[in-house]
Length: 482
Ligand code: THG
Image (cartoon, rainbow, N blue to C red; front, side, top):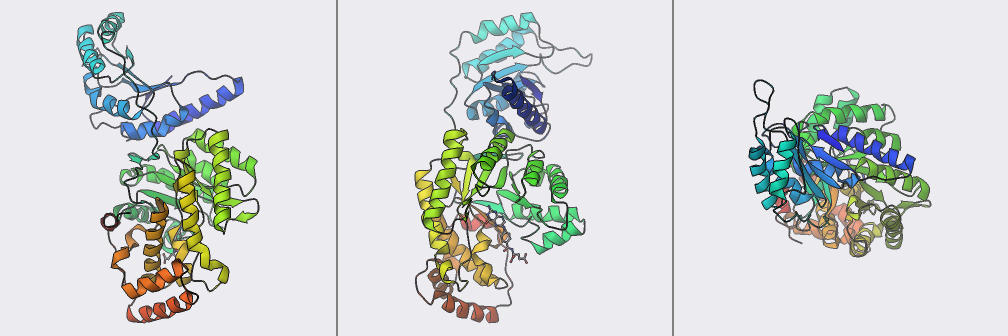
């Protein structure tokens, strides 16, 4: 029993340690988890809502989750309700006999608590009942008398939608158009972020992270991979700063690094259910299994790149084959929840002039469709800005390519993307001539599509000075319905 939890990161460390002990002794015991909510904000002391808390610890597959100690039974009702709705395991409650009074005593009598538990039991809010500070055998006796009159709570069936958390819960439902992951807090993807980090202006760097959320990001990607800095140290430093900014840490965090030691250090800093970006089979199945198992134990989701021992997948069939092989290992062998898996079938640039790049977008779409249709539970994501790399310096054209790619990608089943959230164009609002030229390239419709787009791009570049209004992206997202 991990109980009286007020700091989820601490609890996750305890749950990790428990799993290590189970491994060592070769035996599993049921695990119970109990959180405490000490004020009427309805959040843990470390700032999480009950659902966000549950998403952070459910990987431990506890036999029960519940609430103990704190304010007394009466005030626990809304939090117990929320937990009871989201958690498909048993629910426990063992409250204090009220708030401590001025003399450090507890005023709620056995009959007071029994009356409250009677109501909770009638509404099916819990399965396991007890008392914390200030309760006595008489309290327990009175509770037992009332709750046994009611039929036991029936836990809801296991959740089949992806769920992540920061201070708040992010549950991804099919009605959501696209989950946007902010790309700008990336030292290699944003020269401005890189400069701020290099100059030690972490406050300025936090502002970039915050701005992405203000302009629509549901998750933020953080990447500190740069040769000249200590990436691991900077990842830890930055994540700890993010943790103390509630307007940033309310969203789930995607820890982006090509170095496993940076990823693992990052996982030890986030109390919510974050996402690792990324793992793959590029070093073979054993390393992949080991990393996936660890991520599961830390309680995070994982981006799995379509990358194997022979390299990155660049055809439809290779994208599908690698993702399918990874799925079988993760889901069948390691018992990882498929909703914790986000496949990234590789967004590569189009319009490069190279013949073999002409299929880069269409192959991504075809693979995405098969992955979503045949590998149940998974999400598909990708780094959107990659697709327009060959039009760097020409933002109107880049944004039009992004709009077209997202439109067709979402139609195929892309439900998440790493994007610059304030800079997305609405598909229907892109000038038709430009969109036609862009779609000829993206959809590989004509042999001279790239040459034609380059001509259009040059004209547009001459016309516009490259200025670009920022929009709050949620607004346009509600405009496209796929
Ligand atoms: N898949 C996964 N993770 C990823 C990627 C991916 N992480 C990194 C990257 N690709 C996604 N992130 C970015 C971030 C920025 C840019 C592209 C991808 C980008 N930046 C501008 C540029 O370089 O032209 C910066 C311009 C500026 O700020 O002035 O394009 O594919 N799983």
